[in-house]
Image 1 (cartoon, helix red, strand yellow):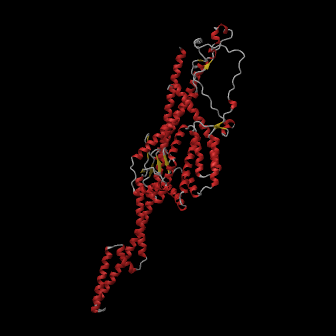
Image 2 (cartoon, helix red, strand yellow):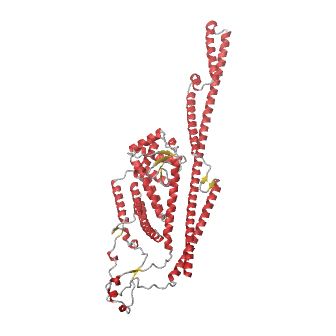
Image 3 (cartoon, one colour):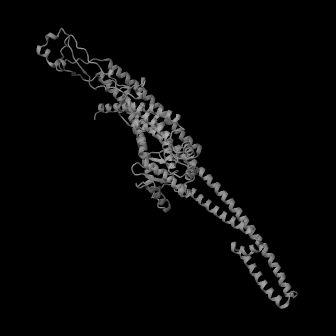
Length: 620
């Protein structure tokens, strides 16, 4: 394929994409207005269906004509312009005075109606000719960035083994059986992930943070699995891939970016509505509490290629929680009105303006005089090459384009310098290390440290509860019962020895009383020893109880300290994740600007070479 044919294909592609983009922009505005007017009565799934109309309009290269089309109105009426031919077809006529000089056979033959193909005029450089290449560059940059992100994330997932914990695997299998999903869905634990998510287009996998099943119980994990499996059953992974492709084709249209952003939010609302509708009323509140609990533990995740996260932006989470709290099954009237809105917008915008018969060209009236005979190509004499205005216009346009490209290159250099300065300033303010091409190294709390803090907190709280319960139970016992229970509840060597001595003295005292009576000196001495032992035992019991109370207070203070450290560690982890995301966004922006700069330099160099070639050709 030569350059002219490629230019022709690109022109046709840009024309189609531009018309679809303009038509979709009109549809985006209409959908936004309808969603705003009927925001309280429009069910989430039909709100999502209205957004899908935009996807259908962008994906259709050709739509049928209809008198119901919105584009029949005024300035919205568009016509399909015919493509300009590469070679012009014209007729060569001769003056009537010279016509009789031609041979009769030539004058009356069918050559008088024969068109003669002339060579195309000298190429005139237009600014419009570089627009298809700029569009193609943007599409390739977008697709390359998405492919790199997908490959990087897929590589991280492939390095992790599948989850084999029986409780989690059995719970996922039970959810798949309840939802009648027979497609195998591997479960992978990925450290560093902040939310459960589905990943992949053709072979999806359910990716979960390792600390997720340590934080949530079986009911909460089941609700998360049902949400992600609903995405899988509805085909949202494939649809999101189509959205990425269409966004790459229409990268120049900010309305498409905004519409797809809202569509992803409506997708989560529709998925939540489908899950909540299948739950009993008592589990709906648990579903909302699960969202809040995960938001408290994990930060929201961004929207990546081939990734459907459970937690997204905070604004979307607020809408989801409000919808769950106020969820009610849609009435038949609301469903009928929603279908009517969907069908009406589809008829108005998924069609083009109807063809008008008046637009067809009328045949020309027959001429009174016979047409002048046409000379064949071999008879026509080529004109001598002379400088024309087209050459001067071509040179002026090339000079103007060179100035435009140079100005754009200078602006891009300024943007690159500003982005680099922002990266340096951010790393300097936060005290982190940044390496170009590898991201930021931020000293934060990793997942292992958080897991250790959670384990310590759990153990500390268990110890405190056990000790405090035992201590309160012992305090309520009478003194005699306390003496009997304390050696078993809180073993103490000294107390056990005193109790053994007391038992021995009591036995000996009983024998002496039987033999000598209470007034005997040995009996009096044993009574004194018994009283002394009883006082020591009482003092030892009070000391043990006092130490137990201090130990309970110490465990409580330790539990509070670990809880504060865990909270601080979570905040540090969230801040580190936020800083890492900021660095990654700036790095991606810098990579895009670098590629755009290389494209501009290459095009500027080609233009200068063309100018030099044209200058030498005109000089000769």
